Length: 169
Image 1: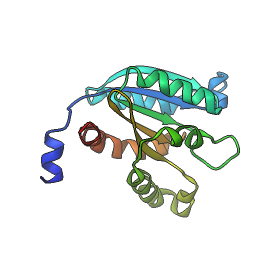
Image 2: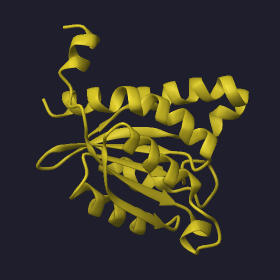
Image 3: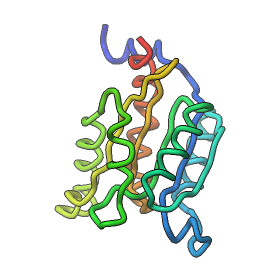
Image 4: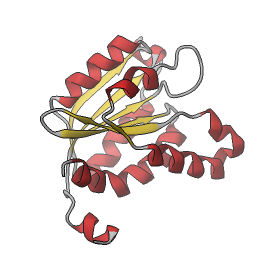
């Protein structure tokens, strides 16, 4: 079956959660533009936002928020904490939870980022993965910058439905 045929059989809508990982936003010192952008863009596609949280760059708080989100959502999108500073711990927090890592998401994200920021794209550790419990769920880990989120959403809006279909087979 071609990828077009697979996509045609994929779900048309999903429930999603957005978790912003940011010390400054969690303290109310910065508005969460990236999180709000994700919510608005995915709602335009007919998807339902069922969870939203802003947490500091702390492993246990990130994990707790994702576990809460997975109770309600098919797709969880985190924004922030994917860089290389000491406080960037989203990947370390969530990577061990993945049953399957979708390395292609990060690769394509960095390729598209390279077109915008050239070799600075190597600083991003954006990734995605499948977490299996009663049902398989998809988690995307995005950088915190609004431009990076816009780039990542181009990929997510095209492939999240297709990923969900295969993850649940």
